[in-house]
Length: 55
Image (cartoon, rainbow, N blue to C red; front, side, top):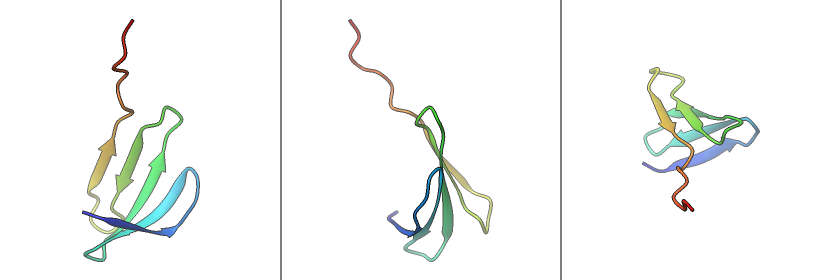
């Protein structure tokens, strides 16, 4: 799915998908992001990338 930014902001932005759904992007202090759909309540959670370079 591809998204288009409708209203840019921090920590909240509004996005629209190709099917017309409106999503809100919430960026948290840790770098995690949550994308709740305003109409149907679905949520997409994108965790902070794990550190892969261990010493």
